[in-house]
Amino acid sequence: MTTRPGGRLRIWARGPILMVLFGILSVGAGIYVGGLVPQILTSRSGDSHGSAAPERLILALQEVFAAECQSASQASRTVQNVFSELGYTDWSVQHSRGVTHSNCVNGSIVAETHTVVLLPVLSAAVRSALQQLQDTSYDACLTERQLTEMLTATLTSQGEANFEIRPGPLVAPTDLYGEVENHVLSGCWVYSTTGGADDGLRIFFLAGPPSN
Image (cartoon, rainbow, N blue to C red; front, side, top):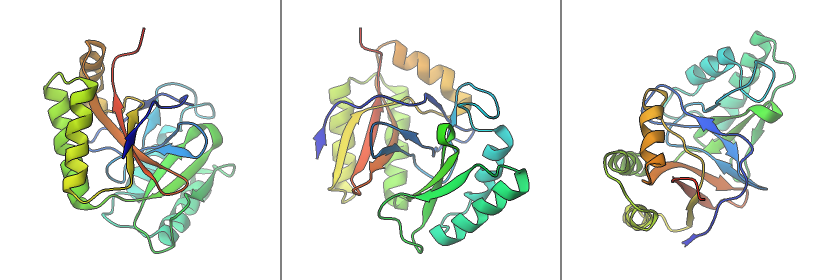
């Protein structure tokens, strides 16, 4: 496991209503930011054909990925049907590297490129452990080092080995976003979300105060 600085973000993310999150951003070539369960991440601003995903598309995809496990082949067909029903003919579905047709997947919006990317789902045990860690980071004011050590211990205790920890975007539930953002701006670090690289490496992102 290694920890290294994150790359440049293409969009700044804001999470959905539910406490557990899923979404996607691009953070440099071949790196994607995801989340905990099949939900959809939206950008903070933009019109229906700009950098933000259309609200009705977000709502439709949240329903599509509400199931605990949906295969990549099933998800691809269903998302394509959603595009057709809503008239978004310029949107497409892509599979991240390593996803097979039988994998349980999350659906993820890249609004800038009008794409929904399918990524593998974390195990239920890892998702639960990450949710607990995220809650702790919201309640306590942790340093980057403290949170990195806690996250490393959490992941290794769940059998995770091939991963990185790095600073990344702030992802939080919509109903808590303001509180979490203020928590971060006051100097605290929080567990934000997870993602991966095209080569299958799992990446876990922490969010902290902006550097001067």
